[in-house]
Image 1 (cartoon, helix red, strand yellow):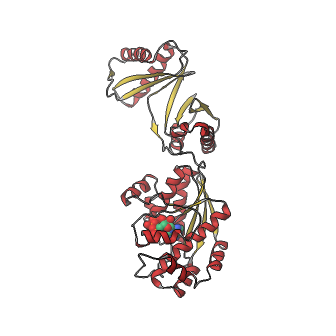
Image 2 (cartoon, rainbow, N blue to C red):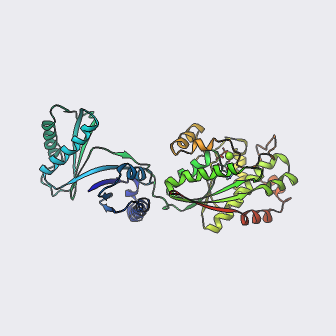
Image 3 (cartoon, helix red, strand yellow):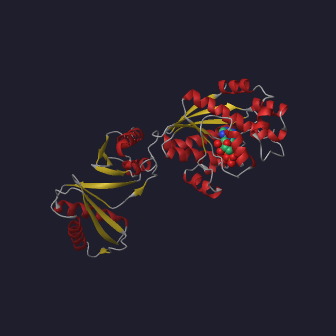
Length: 391
Ligand code: ATP
Ligand code: MG
């Protein structure tokens, strides 16, 4: 039988909420591993153990290291509570490592949380270290300060021995921190914004605005590809695809041309909020970033904000572009984001935009439009697409 130990840091600190978080994580892991038969999950003293008879470690490790809430994982060997069993198990692990490299330095680090065991941690380290050093005289040498390999021995209800740890993503288990409606464009920023909120446990749905037929099917496909990239972390996402063309035409016809951008942005917010209300989502999420473009000045953000009642979260507000790109590359959305398809119609975009719009001016312009009617129709005619990781 093979075992992987799953460590989760922050969620263990949550006092009486701890159960909720652990249950959410266990549910998440179970769902994500559900296609693998005969896998067992156990929770024990602030850890989880995944047991299986015959699995592909790489596959399971890949899933676990992309599950929010997990800090790290290790493949472990288990043995009985005797020093002889530890010798034998540690020896087997060293033999496996020696298949990958001819020699290495090591140290043994024992932790005894089971105080019923007769030896203390330093004594266990000393004995097992001595045994391994003796057995592999030619290949291994001890280095307590900077070893290539640490042989970890955890003495709990059983003994767990491991030499490898893979980092996880951290964060909080998905769907433990409320629901957020992400405004998802085809750009670099918004997929990253969604990822960061999801990583804190916020359940996502997405709204995308396009100007079909002025924008292409490829542009639409690009946004769905971005949403699909997020399903690697969140399993499934519902995307509401809204045509903004009629609204853009109305603005173009009736309002000052330099207000096109800010007015469309307010419509986007209003429509996203309307859909959020219907779906019982409690906040909006955007990829906005202070001072990045003309529409993202303090005044611009104030004017878009004032259109809606729900809180608007902008996790990237103070990020530098290079740092956003770094995350985009890590989550593999970057290459898709930079494909050259426009998400919304640029035909109507003016040469000049208002840099410091005022709420009263923008509201005056909006009063020239059949706002309610336009929003109602856009929401009603939206298309809903559900994407799943395994599709
Ligand atoms: P991004 O890279 O996310 O597109 P951006 O730097 O291009 O951002 P803007 O185009 O000003 O900035 O958009 C700011 C935010 O408004 C986006 O991050 C996104 O949340 C939202 N948004 C913009 N266009 C759309 C769209 N077509 N559909 C849905 N949301 C959008
Ligand atoms: Mg954009």
